[in-house]
Length: 295
Length: 287
Image (cartoon, rainbow over the protein chains, first blue to last red):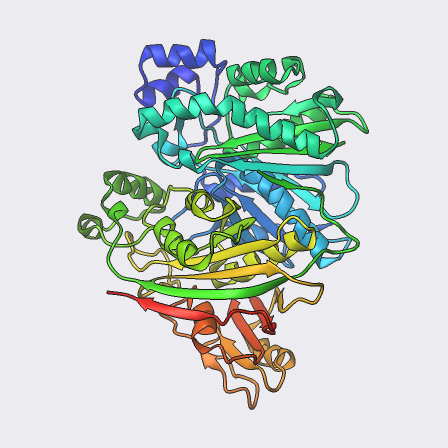
């Protein structure tokens, strides 16, 4: 759906819509009004070419959910997905309250659980992607739209194509509230955002023993383009090395952005063996997270 | 800021022991249950599933918010000189603030400003998983003190699409864990793909004579090991009951085996109280 179509549907003014297109760099948002959550997540699982033949090794399925709730209790798409994809030896659960930063938390948790279990062959599956079922799941005021993309990621405790070097997360509970109903909170959040995001990214790099100059790439959230232009100026990193391809064409897919952008980076050949890169995510509420990895 | 290095496969760090348990029951209702946006949010949530929100329940404004239940426990359970590194809020049945990231708020009010997150969609097994996560972080040296909170509130705002456990009161339990030496006083395990018929044999294998045995509501009809004299917890407390029973029935220094079962997952936690363990306690504060 175009920014204009979606903006009109959500009752935005023409000025607000123009701002989202021209200033924030949005063009289209992916939505599937007739599909349900299980269908959305199954799409990602079906495309995970590394999974077939390894289903019996999956011990955990973690659903990284941005919205604290996505379906009415006790409905849950996970057991059905486990059955459908033959993940009979896995237990499943949802991690949330990190909003759109939940996928980085889920990757870290998965690695911890697998390492503690001590089975080097075992795997965990992290799923992300949500339905835009209510206004709070459709619009980030003055900033972006949410879209219905989904992604799946396999985590192992041993060697793999991407090795985690550090995970960092900073939470600012003073932004616990609804930006849509509190304009003053929105202004304060917008003001605090660049510094908080820069701080957590820089801290993650420092913990990994790296500086900004050692990074090949940043995999961002897909909220908008302008926030990354500002952040790059703030930390002195070239915006050309931030994978912003999906901002206009796919949109902000809740916690799935990290994996969607990883797919784009590898498909485009932007990551070479040994490259260090950083995934950044921000969640309303507010949680700011960064993960440094080596490809 | 929470900073974590990659998990350490070798040379695991200190184990996490259970130091204190607090169970509370709450009366009254949260002002959040009157928020006008709750009606909009819930209507949007249930509509795709052919359900309607209970307008009468919404009008009366009953129920509790997990951020508020959790905050009460944090304030009673964690001292100002006990900085917590990790806070996990486990829940299954819904909050009256369904769109709120309550765990972030709880991290804000908890000493140490821990990393907070929520774990759900695993029923009564969620607390066991939360404890395993806390132990895994402690093993890697990223966490020295962790707080696991489990909350349930009784007000439903829509009919359930299928039968499921539902609490008959508003309750929360806090489990405060601390890194100890290398010898853990809390061992948590689970087993997937377990049929209900297999449970008695697995329980008999797990239980050691002399241990107290606490069985969760998912094991209400399961045969207990001979001689175990189990405490069976109230099905009206489907998510907190087992853990408030730990606070209520804690038998001094006697080791305890806690067991729960749901959807083919058998969860076990063995607690061997250490000398420095503070005796758990339970407060019933309902109106």
